Structure formats: C-alpha cells, structure tokens
Length: 70
Figure 1 (cartoon, rainbow, N blue to C red):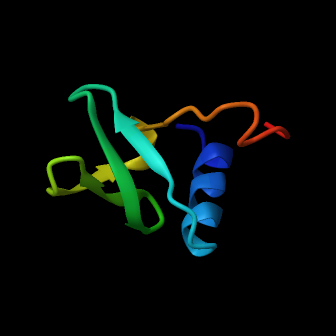
Figure 2 (figure 1 turned 90 degrees about the vertical axis):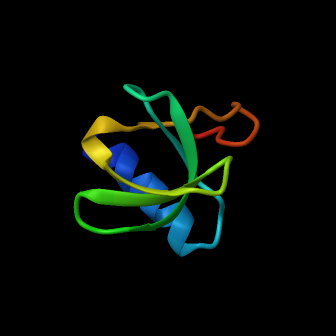
C-alpha cells in the first residue's frame, strides 16, 4: 500500500473506526489493531494476530457510499 493510503488507515484506527487490510501473498485479511512506522498489527478472521509490513498490504476496498471523497 502506498504511504498516503496507510495514513488513511492510521487515521481510521486513531478515530476508533475499523480498518481492514489484506496481505496479497497469503490472501489473509485482518482488522487493524495497531500500527507503527512501517507495520500494522492485525487480527485475522480466525482470531490470530499478525504483524505485516504495510508496504506488503493493501487496504480493503470500501464502497463509494462509505468513502465518497476517495
């Protein structure tokens, strides 16, 4: 994911809004629990925690109704 997209994900997390990312190489999806400069910690649908480099992730798409300005 590009840095500006990561900034949106971080803003969502800070605001208490659920943000989701996908790790393309493993196809795992996760809800972002926390982040650092280059990493996101996520909880997968199976309840496992993972730490991924944000450069290797993609923000999960949202509908135009949810994010009309994007």
